[in-house]
Amino acid sequence: MNRPAAISGTTTFWQRHQRQAAPWLFLAPGAFMFLVYVILPIFQSMWISLYEWDGIGEKTFIGIANYVELFDDDAFYTSLKNNVIWLVLYMLAVPAGLFVALFLNQTVFGIRLIKSLFFFPFVLSQVVVGLVFAWFYDPSFGLLAQVFEAFGLKPIAVLADEDYVTYGIIVAGLWPQIAYCMILYLTGLNNISPEQIEAGRLDGAKGIRMLWHVVLPQLRPATFIAVVVTVIGALRSFDLVSIMTDGGPYGSSRVLAYYMYEQALSEYGFRMGYGAAIAVVLFAIMMVYITVFLVRMFSEERGAR
Image 1 (spheres, one colour):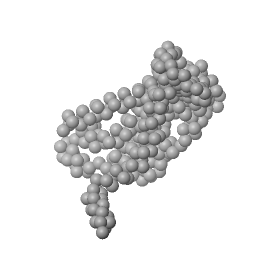
Image 2: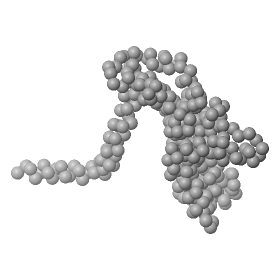
Image 3: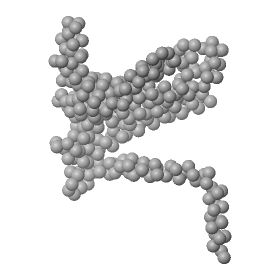
Image 4: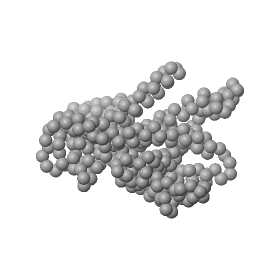
């Protein structure tokens, strides 16, 4: 006799709370995957960094010895310096993507074809991008060498020169990254309020003033995503370095992600603890940079209110 009443009570409880519970039910699978494949591996890397381990045998607890060795490692400082260069120059993708998006955000004949040409680098694999630019930089038959020869200059072996190699790889990485930022800003420009644009025109805003005071504030969500993704892409740069130079010449183009691979997974390494320590340092740099950007963005929004 009490069973129908219990079922009725359960149904009533769900009906009263389904609006609050439904979003969490939809988010639960993604949150679970994020916990298992992102959060837990972060803490696992921190734990492994406290051990000496080859990935197969027994672990030996050594505390912070891996970090002490890391900060006495010249190769680590070379990789860190290159990552800083990557981080600074890679941020050029954000304003460059905005400039291209503003150029493409117009209704003229053939603009769709032009958009597709600018979008093309984004759909290419990083391996393909690396091979294309490796051929482009080749001092014997590359397009860059032919340009130098056309001006009567001696070709430069970009990927074989310690002074130029890192910058050459960054240029290769900027090509698809600018396309990605362009897509984000094109989406944001399509959602700009026309009422605010019209109000700005009535107030006499045009050109740079219109862009700075009316357009850019409405593009903050796109800017946030572009900056975060660009920072992450700069700090985890691995594939282009691996494809184009394999860390050379003489380790001068190494970045932290590639050095971590060399130490932990390559035939020269199998030092899982040391590689995990490099990964932890890389994660800390990434979190500091993104946190500073978030705090600054939120403070600017509060000041605007």
